[in-house]
Image (cartoon, rainbow, N blue to C red; front, side):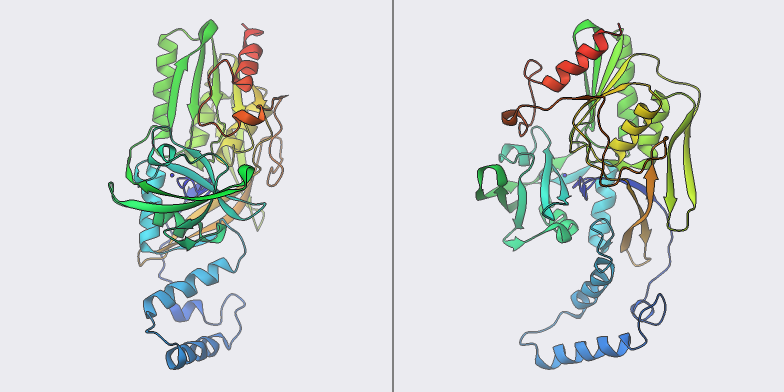
Length: 394
């Protein structure tokens, strides 16, 4: 699920995430106190609100939920869908998701910035979500009858996950058909591969990466080595509908592909830069990356590095345009904050936030094929173009 990168926690989609362990307990009074520009009267205002609620609210108030809601509201006030507060359960779920193993419905989701709705990026083939008929582009508007938007991404992801064999009800709005429907999905254990591969015609190897999780680098190298044993002469890496993932993982894969030099650099609010470099070792066969409008974050880091180093060609449509890096800060009580801390820049110095990366060869899929979970080789015009480009180099 992005819900693995929403694209599984966000573009659930999605994301280039650096994990920092910065453990310092953030107590309630400290948060609501006098630092960070918060007004001196904030504590009094909060106390007055709580007093009114206790005195007049018709039902019993769960004070723990009230406190959690305040933490969530503080972070949500930033106005960035990628900067979020996670309670203990959500933080545990997030850690499971980025490991590449979890239990749920097997759907990658992200926040569509045009309508701020939770949007299906790609159901895993054979997953409960796929079997229930969910398609890329579907909008998840309710989970178990609770209305959800992009602001509720983590909560929605958490509700869709659960023990294998249990059920969750999801309400879907399918925009291209102007249809809203409900479906009940039985959760399952999702111990999925993030990488798949096969050999195509003319000894062209094909590797698909659906997300960049902890397991992805080893899976990528296993796929590459298997294709090498089959004497591949060129390689296609398919990043279509890949919402991103872990920065340290994508840079390790990029290091295998490009020559010695800059892979990506990040820059924070103070202008501090962190750079990620590749060594002189590189895979020396013709290369094409397949990308589309759902290739985001870490996928764009890899695409930008390959393009800027002229190591290979990009085929497909302009990528998503997420040039932001999130860091994870555990609070100390089991909860955590995920904060957008910097922007990333391609080797040529471009931040693609809101812009994306334009392919060398722009190829649109026919309208009727864009929502299909998988395409046959003879109908996949983007793949056909990638093969054509590589044939010219063999």
